[in-house]
Image (cartoon, rainbow, N blue to C red; front, side, top):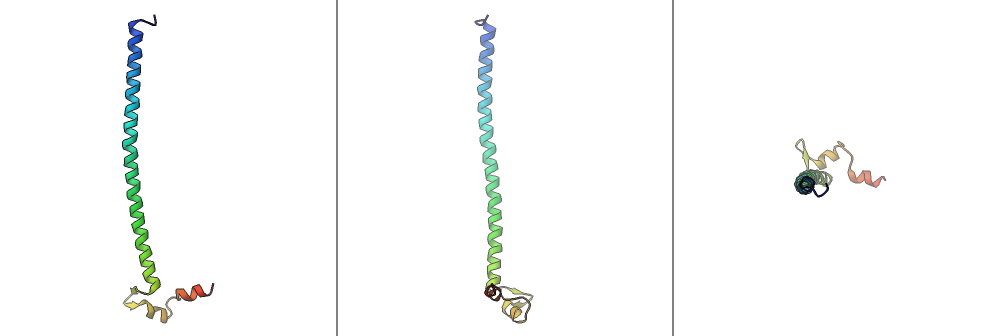
Length: 92
């Protein structure tokens, strides 16, 4: 009975479709993992650009290169609008 044509044909079908399923799964995994990695990389690049821009803006504000409301940062500081960063660091 084990050597019958039906059993052998069923075994071959089982082996063929199992192999086909494994190959398809590996292909699908590769495609989806690349797409996910690309989306993550793009998201991280956008976050890095945002953080770098904010860091540059904060650095310019610290050095007094930025003007607000038409007045230079040094004049706002002299007028008492906000405390000097260097004076707040010196108190610690």
